[in-house]
Length: 445
Ligand code: GLU
Image (cartoon, rainbow, N blue to C red):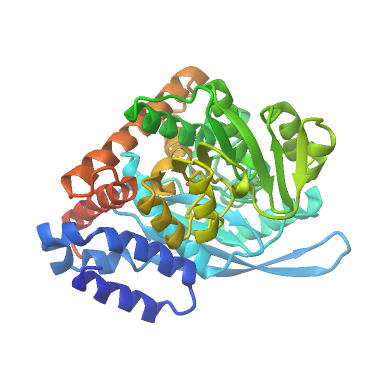
């Protein structure tokens, strides 16, 4: 790492003890910025990089609620408003027992660069809670969301901070959050949250956008190598919103998804994942992936080993952070995988990324490959601002163009800064320059 950046990184370590995921996300970006600092001393002179590593505002709050048994439960809520140089803070809410400040900060930090890469006017932020929705009733989820919003409402707004979903937060939760916001503020402020239902201000394609966008990105990677999805074997980890719509688009484009997973294990299905069945099990019944295998003759369930041991040409990790470590990356490469595109945020460890680089695997980081979700959220905000709603086809077309633009910007920037072919260097530098130039223009704030 460049000496000036090493100082910034050391300061981040010292100021944010114990937040390993945040350290990892910062390290990955700073590690790419050496050539930028050499070319443009103004970024270090004006402390733009140091300012970028310190959130503008961090909110931590108590979320008390009463469960079905009448017991009082206490969770912790977070919203990290990281950077608003390009637009209102924008990023999802994650409800998962692993959530703590370090996770929210890593996600918020990544979101700054991802959102900048989309070219749309959105800053970066993230939030969530250590609430575990698993096994909770509808009523419990609703009461939790209402309590969460009872504090969060004072910090957000269509021009201030616009949350959306992430792991554990989908249309149902956004509905309860929006309902409570509307009730407290007495305003039908559609643009305060994205990921809404279609009948109450949502955008077509938003549900599909992260998964579809990642696959559009891979399509561009393939095109760049004069190749296509035709007959390609793909492994997608996870079976949530990102994974499901990634699988759908891979199948539409002629590839075959041969495995997917959830936190209890994985299924292999050499005939290709039956999407209707997967949606029924995961979205309607909110069941486990094992139930998919029980109902599908060609599928096998395993809770031993990893989905990344299944041979594939293309890997789309769409579960969670650090799901591919060095050993699994080696296994993927040995099994013939040549493209990795991240549908999740930071699913590959730094050691895994190094394995991909050494093996010349084309590797697209989440901040580029999964930007379609937040980009379509920005399209939802545009529709809300103009009280309009667009049809599916033209919205999907816009998403596809945005992903294609991000793909090209990554490669052009990587070329310009001496790292040809490196999507991660290109994504980090292009996102950084966009947000830093805005910060320089806005003065020391
Ligand atoms: N949570 C998603 C992400 O990681 C979407 C955020 C949004 O739509 O604001 O980008």
